[in-house]
Length: 431
Image (spheres, rainbow, N blue to C red):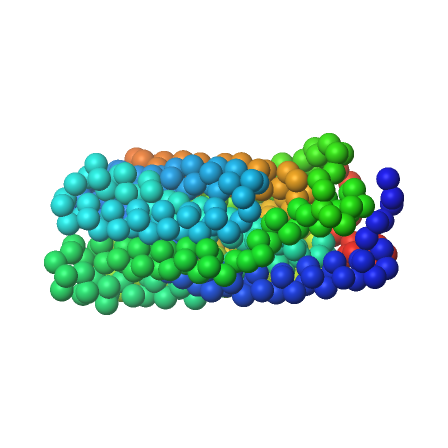
């Protein structure tokens, strides 16, 4: 086998094509993620409050988060498998559209007062959450090795616009819902239905050529030396150990973040904060989850994956401590705690994503990514469901401290990695 069949003019041509399609892909993903962020915000902002209203108990108020994250687990599995065969475009488009249909189902369930329909609709709504996360991989498919953190983070930072706007529209959306004869707390799900379907249509129409299919074709040509793109007969490499480390990082950060975040609106309502204050806190939290992504991606590429994983664990610990120490009527400290919570999650997700991309190749990447996102969703489901039980049996303070100290497990997890470079070498440097 040739050591580097894409050399000279062929290598330049391949890199030019990769760069052009990568730029177009990022533009499309950014537009879809702005819309997707607005859809994502509904469940986070008022899902627990809607369930509390319909069930008449706060012990099960974490159940909506558990249900839509379980739904996101199934969607992550399906999107990962469909991407392996058909590419990113179809899986991401239909994932968002399914999430929109689920949001519409939540509105109908609230109008009908049907708890069983609410549970089913929340499960389907979770497809949008999974698709929001999966879209970050589209930003990394064609990125050079030393720019993978940046590529995935561009997709994430775009989510901020919609995700921050969504919670701060709770009051006007509630008024709109009242006008339409819909329960007030179902208002944000009207926005989610429209936003998710629009995001799916944007991807279906404009994500061409498919970034994953192109990346796989380039990899096959590189492996076989065949310009026609005939698949290589060389067996697909095994997934590297870094993928398992990256998966563990993302699962732990998701578990901690969801557990504390889910119960914060319930905690605030118990201390007589209005919906506008809840929307402000959750909006700031979601902003901290997504907005720093562009800077985080650069830090991950420049300083390496390991330092950012450590930063994630320490930041989540600080978030738990501040949330536990905040007096019940202190809006400022709750905002600070939720900002730290979102920032710690962001550090973990971007660095974990980069670890996974580093340890995989196009032939095995979507299947691996889908499986990992299933685990992330299951962690979120567990964290969301158990958070209500923990808070009901103890307190919000105990929940926050427990989550913060659990995040420190991220640091010993890094010991599983093999010694070696913490930052990939660029293609240009390799040549």
